[in-house]
Length: 559
Image (cartoon, rainbow, N blue to C red; front, side, top):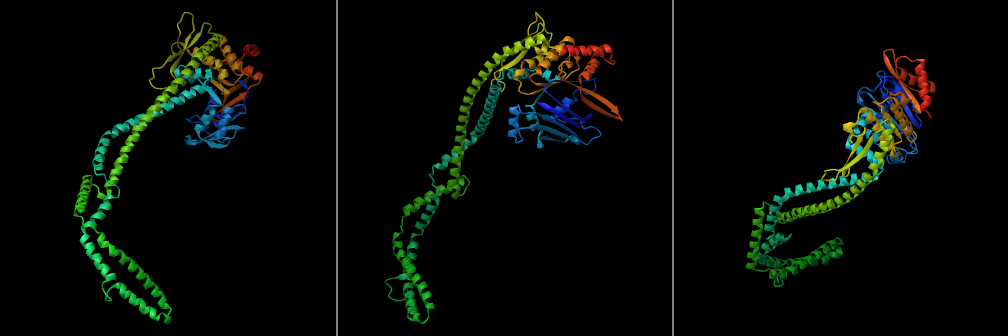
């Protein structure tokens, strides 16, 4: 719960430090004193937008700090731990600087406004007149029903399944669009691939054909020149010393005859001997080579024809012959991608159908829980409204199937809170029948009816008693006090009957000195509380009668 607020240089507050306890705390003050300034500070500290001139004119910055006891709030502690912001304490601080700039901290660690808002959702709920009007909206009514039912896990599951369904649906539409876009290109790719495939081209065929073609077309020359080379290297029929082998042998013998005279000759002899071995190896291979060369004009003609087809195909598709096989592989890959696209479409369609079934199962389970809770909540609201001087009030909660063709995050139905305040009337939607005062009471009745479902420890009501007075206002005050038994309640009120029932009473006042306006927020003692209620009862001048009336009200209202 909220245990302390520190405010410095915020609008007209120079400095304020307030300690809070459990129960119901009321805030009162004369019209124009800015009774909601404290709530504005809380909202801002919890990540609200900084709009307008919020820094006190004589200051350079404004500071707002909120201290919370989170020892009994496991959800808030888990959030702090998950974000590495500690778990034992919760100090929220926001500093406002000129030109709309601000800095935010949780336990002295810099954070974003989104983080402030996320944590604030677990700590404080502010119920303003704006939110009373939000109660007229079907979505807000459905949220109140779900909170009362306590099936938030079911709600979250349905929302998640709907989001997943829509994600799959968007993916499927994108895949279909890509499929349609690829249709014309796919036909053209297939025609090209079928044409090239007729060649039955292999990866190394072109280089192999080119090599064989050169060998066949130069067969005669190859035979002649290799035979000549063999004769020059080592012709066994030549008895002269013209062959390289014989000359090399003579050179070796000459050096061997004088090697004893200079060791340097050994190195040269070793090199010549190695050359002799290599020469004999080449000569040995050359002896058989001319006989292995084929003179095959038919084969040469066939290769010529094959190369012509390959070159013609390459020219047709404007690539080099060496790139033709690569083009064939690229076409196959692109067509395979289209096959994969079609398979992905089918897989997503299957997943979408399964997700639809899963969503329908979860949503129907949520609908059954809502139907069961709706009757209980309507009865609880009705009983509370009758306690708030609407003796003939009846509330019903209608759940009607939506016309959504696709899974909706809110489930299968829309919600409508129906009301009649007088006998003989028909039940009608709140927006059609509720006056301002009735709406305030209905809103409060919903909160009281669902109090046990509230996991947020601090509830703030901004002028929840708008449009009501007298005995009804006293009943509202008693309900707020009752709500304060299980929650910490802060309530801005202009009603003395509501103020008299607070566990704590804060008074907001303004002073004007030296061309400066200062707002003070003070915790009232019992005597001061009586005086403040007397002021609220009596108007401009406080008389002994109004003071006695105020004390009587305090004595009568408090148990």
